[in-house]
Length: 363
Ligand code: SF4
Image 1: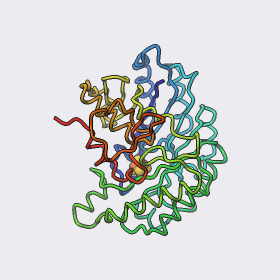
Image 2: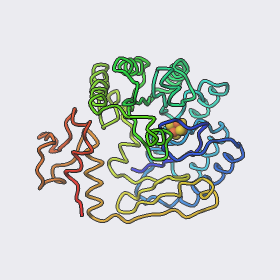
Image 3: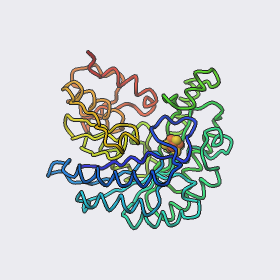
């Protein structure tokens, strides 16, 4: 199988914690140029996949894809359909922000998504507490987030909701309320990330100046355990460090990343992988990408491939085949005799990075 990722590099404003590459969209003409360039890029890369691989998933992320007008979105979908065989696509996900769904025109957007074959949406909620949302510089409040999720679950049978924990000021009871609210809204999938000091984010600048301090690891750990417990109690299955779903509703697109299936990334900063040794990435700069700047790439060594298999596999509850890590001591992994696979135990998922490090080949 194969996947297509489209990076939409626009946001209406920047969130405090975010270090992703995107540009504040002030100029409608710029979005038009972006769509035209994406059309050209899709046409140029139409032969990227080997003949025997079938495109099964499409994921449009960002940035904020829901900032694009319906006509621009349809244009992108038409260019994909011109360049690739999309007849076997099983999952087409678009990331949306609550304010775009609730504003006038939001219903047109949802109709366009459905008409273009979108069957999964991922909504960035992050919190159901107004004070925290304001501090994060999100453009929606809690009521708007709730309303957006209701509209989305009414329009799509497969909705994913993002939450954030592990930041200063978030109490255990607020976090529990966030998780319970998300589960009660009837979504099929929840991704929950611990806030980090991403390079280039406003938060990391505040931390550098001594104006923000991350909470203690104990606090973050207990919030992670709370997440696992409440979602388990409400019928969600954890299938990756940060991802939980109702049975059968895992993200096919992201699961394919973790299984090292091939994918093609379109748009500034987007990465591609041929499913074997070659990784490529586009320049992370909208203007340079519009001007046709060449991307970069690398060929993976055998050690790189081994490390990727371990890193990506151990992120998931399915883990890795025993044959992969055969020789090493495995004191911090669980073994499932029925599947012959090693995985990180449920609670240890919180410290997965340090466990995974034990199994990597280093020079
Ligand atoms: S979190 Fe999303 S909306 Fe906020 S700045 Fe980052 S990409 Fe943009």
